[in-house]
Each structure stands twice: as structure tokens, then as C-alpha cells.
Amino acid sequence: MAPKDSLPLALRLYRGSTRLAGPFAGLVLKRRLKRGKEEPTRVSERRGIPSLRRPKGPLVWVHGASVGEIMSVFPLLERIRASGCVVLLTSGTVTAARLAEDRLPVGILHQFSPIDVPSYVKRFLDHWKPDLVLLAESEFWPNVITQGAERGIPFVLINGRLSQRSFDRWKRLRKTATALLSRMDLILAQEHDDARRLTALGAPRVFTTGNLKFDVPPPPADSLALTALDRSLLKRTVVLATSTHQGEEAMIIEAHRRLRRKMPGLMTIIAPRHPDRGRKIVEIAEESGLVAVMRSRGHLPDRGTEIYVADTIGELGLFYRLAPIVFVGGSLVKRGGQNPIEPAKLDSAILHGPYVANFTAIYAELNRQRGAATVNDVDSLTTSIQRLLDDPDLVRNMSQSAKATVTRMGGALERTFAAIEPYLIQLRLTR
Image 1 (cartoon, helix red, strand yellow):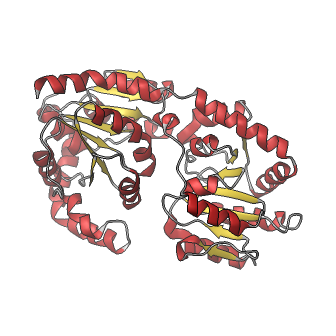
Image 2 (cartoon, helix red, strand yellow):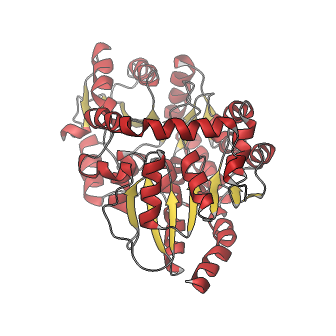
Image 3 (cartoon, one colour):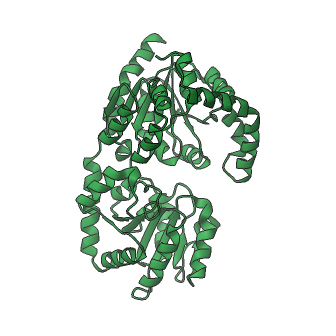
């Protein structure tokens, strides 16, 4: 393990600046509270102040930044808990915390992650005293890693990924990247390309275990809510656009406007990546002369509804089960694309844009197996949806291929647990 005084200049400057910024972090939190980005009753957790007692026994701290990372580790959390360890899950967003409240396996603790300020991190580590830390995907918080390493806590990166874009940025700070990665005891990468990039930046022990998201069960759907929504649709044809970002909704709404000329009963459901944008999406639809309502206001679609804005949290399972054709967002604008695994598991024919750098391997395989297709603009989006609406056999073939593809790409859960199990055995033997 690298000694403290071996930190490169950039990392020492970061630690010093965050130490000085500590007194001002409260102002940042207040601003975030006003914008709804923090939970008012739990904001102290962001300062490292616990709201729960630490149970006795070996404790594994698992951290994921937001909803996607949290969802991907749920099955792993249950395995770790069953091994006899206490499991603490942290996340950094309100939406992820609410998801944890609704779906966290029994017996697993949840806290908001501390802001990466030295005093906050110290307070958090002093209270929880984790025996093992698992960081999901690409969470490289310098103070967390360096303070934890100084305490001799082993760090493991699980479901690790590093895009080419991020790799190019980290190359400019290679010494900093190496200092952080060298303090990781083990790195379990999603794909071979991720493993290659992480190794090039100085990670000492890197193995490719696959993507945990393939092993997550499809999102559930409340049976009563599903029945009510299905009845309200009156057997109308439904298209779903999920995880959309700013700039995409206008294109989706325009595609709907064109398609309704041939299919006046069509309804498009838009589930934005950030639910707080629901009102803005309604405004875009209304400016296009379409009738739109928001689910968060308690509305069910009626015969006149053309755009149904699904601006709620934890209900995607409902909409996937009602829409055979799904556009996955973050891909017609340069956001890197969102995860297509959930709609693939729930029998959807998938459309996506060209910007899918966050999930390159998955989309490449889905496209190769003809379980998904790429659209580039409003014209191709409209044409592709129309073709699928006209050909139910094509929809069925695409959805079957997508489901078979993601099923075949699973197995990361077993490989990941096998890699961390020696740590868990050691904890039980020494505590």
C-alpha cells in the first residue's frame, strides 16, 4: 500500500482544497435542499453524521452513486448479508435513496454517502468502521479512498467501468489516477475494454467479471396499478420512451405528432430520466398541439390523452409491461445512453440513438442479434416506429432476440461474489 507522503501534487491539492472548503459545504447543501436534490430529514448524513447505530460484527460498506448502480448491486447485497456480514449501502441521490427504501432487501442498512470532505469522511469512517468497501462502477472519491487506505481497509471496485472519454480525461492526470487505483485492493471490470483502460492507468489487480445489471431481476409492477393503467388505455397502441434527457422529448413528441396521422389512437408514454422535468415535457407537448398529462398528478390516461408523462419513481416496470416498443433515451443526445437491459428482459423491441458509449458492448450485441435498432434523428425514429407498428411479427422477433441476448450475457453475479468471497471468509475468521 502506498504511503501517505507518496500522494502526487494534484491529489495533495485536492485534499487541501476540500479541507478548506468544508465550512462552505453547508451552503452547497442548503442550495441543493432548495432544488430538491437532498432529503431534508437526512441531510446530516451528507456531513458524515450517522442516523443509525452500527451493529456488531464485520461490516461491508457498498456504495453506488445513483439508481442504476444501486439496482445493479441489490442481488449482491443479499449474498453478502447471507454470508454473515452487516451490509451498509450508501448512495448519493434522493431518487436512489427512495428506491432503497422501497426495495432494499431486509436487514440491509442505508445511509446517504458523505460528501468527499476530509472531516465528513473521517466522521463517517470513525462511526461505521467498515471492514471492506465495495465501490460500484466508477466511484473514485479521493478522500474516501486515501483515508480508507490509511486505515488499512481493503477497497474493491465492483462492476467497474471506464469509458474511453473518461479514460482520456484521466490520462491527463495519470499520476493521480495511479495513486487512487493503486490503493484499490481489487478491481472487477464489466468488460475487457474497461479492464484494459483501468490497467493502463495503474490498477494493479484487474479481472473482467461482466456486468451485474444482467443479473438483476426485471423491475416489478404493482398488480393493482398495472390493471388500472391497462384498463385506462382502452386497448390503444402504446409506445414508450424511457430515461429521456432534455432535447430528446421534443423529438419523441414530434415523431408522435407525425405518426398519429396514420394511427390516431396511438399514445406515447415518456418516462424522463429526471422526473422533475415532467412539467416541462407537458409544455413541449402542448406547444405541439397534443394533449398531455402527468402521472405524478394522479392522472390516468383517457381517450383524449396523447402524451402520458410518467414522472414518478420506481414504476418503470408498469410501463415496460404495457409497451411492446421502447425507445431508450440518453442516446439521441450526447449522454452516452441509458441501460437497455430492463426493457430487454420485459419483452420489448428496442430503439436507441447513436450515442451509447456508456453501454457500447450491450448495444452492439443487441444490434448484432437484431434485438435492437439504431435511429439517428426524428425522421428515422418516426420511420422505425411506424415499421414496428405495421409489423407485429417483427416486434415479437426483436423482443425475443433482445431477451435471449441479455440472458446469455448474464453470470456476473456469480463471478463477482466468487471474487469477494475470500474477503468475507477472512472477516468471519478474524471478528
